[in-house]
Image (cartoon, rainbow, N blue to C red):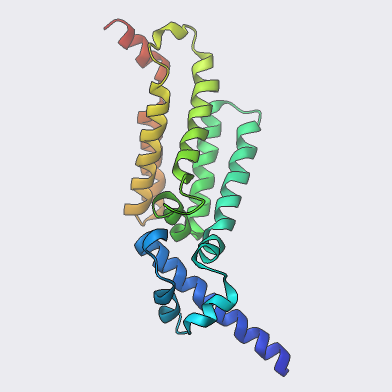
Amino acid sequence: MNRGSRMQYLKEEIKKRILIAALDEFKEKGYLSASVRNIASNADTALGTVYKYFRNKEDLFNSVVESVYSDLFATINKIIVADVNPNEKLIEIKNRILDIFTGNSKEVLILFGKSKGSKYENFKNEVVDVLHNIIQKEIFSRFEDKSIVKEPFIFYVLSTNFVEGLYTILKTQEDGEKISILIDQLMFFSFHGTESRFKEMSHI
């Protein structure tokens, strides 16, 4: 390895250490409370070195989560426009989130619960909006008698509850198979037989 190649290798190694340290710092403390000084210390490098690679904390945070965020929503948007039934869309979205979570669990958890103050702080709400859009425009639109739903806002509430449940599962469980089972159960109790349950309520 020549001197130029070795220097480039060392630079990449330093940057990698910074990103790893940043990932842990953001996951533990969140964007607002995270310290670039702590990140530098945990990366075993000088504070000034961090700023050679990243302009500020925001730039560092974006470097940690941006690719995961973009990958997730690019895939979700493809699923939304696909010509499949709503249940299949929900299952595909679940599967894609799990795929990304398997290789990027810290990044996903940061986006869900540790991104306040960053440009990604509305991530959870964006996921809720995606889910609500599917329920409102595709599941509810197929109800034979839409009058059984006295207040359509309930679909937004259901979407919010589901996303909160999803986040709870992801942040508390480590076994991939168990996570998948729990999310399937959550989907079933949240959305299975929705129309028939509204019909039952209409008689109350």
